[in-house]
Amino acid sequence: MGGASFWYNRVAGIAVRMSALNIVAEAPEGTTAISAMVVDAFGGFALGELIMNGTPEQRFWAKVDKDGPPWNGTPCWLWTGCKNPRGYGRFWLGTRMEAAHRVAYIWRYGTIPSHLETDHLCRNTSCVNPAHHSQVTHKENVDRGFAGFHMKVKSRQQTHCKQEHLYTERNTMYRRDGTRNCRACS
Image (cartoon, rainbow, N blue to C red; front, side, top):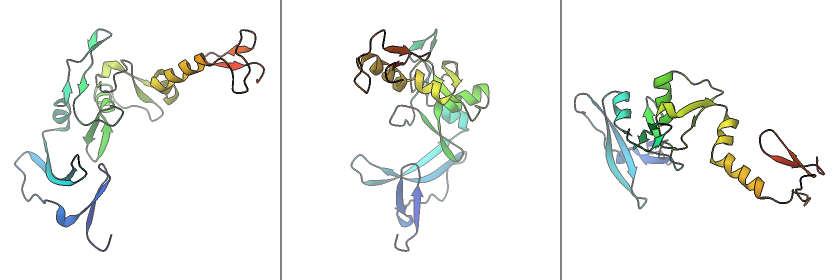
């Protein structure tokens, strides 16, 4: 990058020349000021300060609306902060971005084993209500989710296998997970 001093913003995925940053000499007492480059809607750059007030818990819960749509007798707690393209909440915790629903779950119930994921039982990706999540394997999470549902629906709509054998009662074998196979191909 030509010998100039650069700062790389991993979250935004952009490199910024250090001389372009607005270095904040003093932050108001009780706050942390971080110089940040913000990409505007037209792809240009604008300087801005990200000021984080309070504890991580205070910052987190300030971004939660507990009056969401009901599921199983309790309301969804909607994340109103930063979200990824699929609608899952993102929260800056310590030194990295975390999934907001995982943060809420860990704060309520403790750690999540590395081989498990949290599944949104309410199917609302912006919900952070720990009561609406459960620990499941990756396979179970995918099977329960939209992708798994979509694949099963697509499979049920097919009238022929990949080798063009017709799915009939006699030529179809059903598996425990709800999928089917062609007997002629098996």
